[in-house]
Image (cartoon, rainbow, N blue to C red; front, top):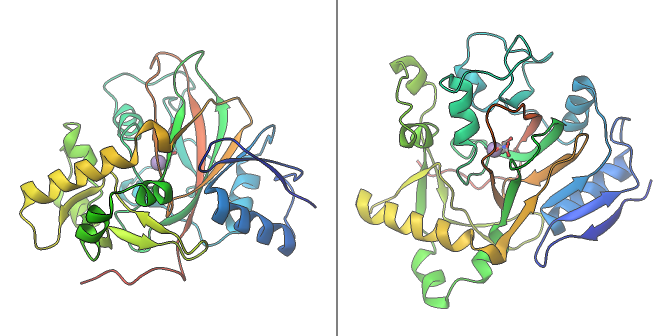
Length: 292
Ligand code: OGA
Ligand code: MN
């Protein structure tokens, strides 16, 4: 099979065609997709209706699966497999959930710029998000290229941030949204992890400005100074120059590299169903060691 790719943004994002993702992929195709991911960081596939099982099988061919925040959940959700994340405002009965439900908090937390599961070690490598139903307007997903963002930093800033480490904590974004109702047991299940603020992407060899909303402090700095630097870096990395907005159609599948990009959902009318499903692989094998 031959993958053909059309670049959609000056810095990154390819629209990919020529492969049927519902079928098992041979080693050569997996390799081609991995190489394309190293180049484009985000790949958009149109018209790929996948069953839940096919979506998970696809993800599994790129590595072990990530459960992310699902560790906190005691109840199974409405999807067929626990490894699939229900990125939707749809409830068990099929209609949209109430505005004050926990699920809406998750939807809104996804509207803050982040890299999936950067709050754990190993973090996420690829996220594969499939659209089932989309609202009539709004609800795009935006991506920011952290390689181009690093390249675009002033040289003095590159020097200043080299070697810094940021603390990433799963519930930081939730706390920011006023969602503070977690048990000690839940908090203990998600201890913070440290990542270098500047990382090197193993596939492309490019440097990355690894910012995002899960980051809440800089090692050895005061909380205030660290947070301000993290906010400045996030603002820099998410300037329009580095951002691509994806307008969803049903049966789109978008794969992004969480090591090279940030993403966020955009606002939409919460009374309209927006239903996506995410399978995620763990970034095993190529990590820098998290510092103690
Ligand atoms: C995700 C996510 C954003 C969106 O699935 O990881 O952050 O637009 N989604 O739903
Ligand atoms: Mn996400």
